[in-house]
Length: 351
Image 1 (cartoon, rainbow, N blue to C red):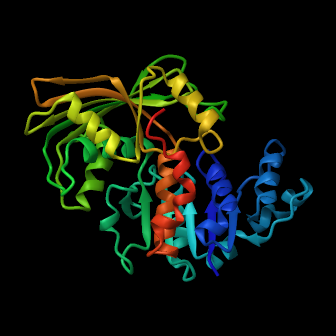
Image 2: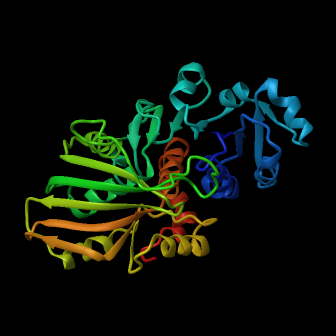
Image 3: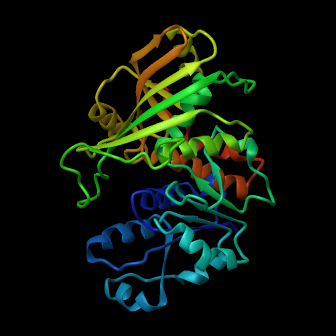
């Protein structure tokens, strides 16, 4: 019996639980369960809808009575839910802590995943970037890289590498222009642009470091550097990128490469609100699952070999796609592509 257990119901966990529950048959899942830590009246409707869609609520024993007071009927206790699961997907900000407390000692699951903020949880993974680096019997723990790391990585693989893997990147620089918070969040809003520290002398921020380590699983040692700034919007992240190559390139060639990659979307829109609005109207519950959305009118080539431009990051959409792919790699390793067909309508090539 294939049971997938999701820990956390936040900005990634909530849509992921719904996605898995809605597509159980296509994904070859017998059961979806999820753990919610805190019983809240304001989130009762959210939990009820996830249960209505077929997901089973799991809670800590000492919280069960409070959940029942809200009208919920928990199916399993949290540790029991982990042990009986085939795959566990941690969508909390304490994945590494949970790994030490629970996951390392659990014998039931064949695989565990955490999201991009949990550095060191396991081998880094992004769909379409390093699939061939995954090893059955070795990679029980995977870290799905962050949304901006997905974006940086797909830009590099699409625009700076040949189909045979030959690397032409001599320098990659990225300015991550980050939204201040998710539209579902009332706290931590930055009222003005706020710059972030360059904590890593070689890579700047974690975005370039993580992209470097992602490609390192394939044997590359890429020269990457990233900076980050939070701006006072809740719509979308954006990235300004500069890719210096060891050969000449043209905008026409760049367009050919972008349109050939089915995980990359192009757009003639210039504002995050227009791209976000497209996702709201045409995405899966508002989410574009493409890895990046490149603003084609910003593309330019400097000194014949230096490509610059802007792109938008589909936030939790791109790590969600990679999470589903990794889950299927654990459950149905020979059927990953076929079972993901149900999501292809949300992988746009133009926005």
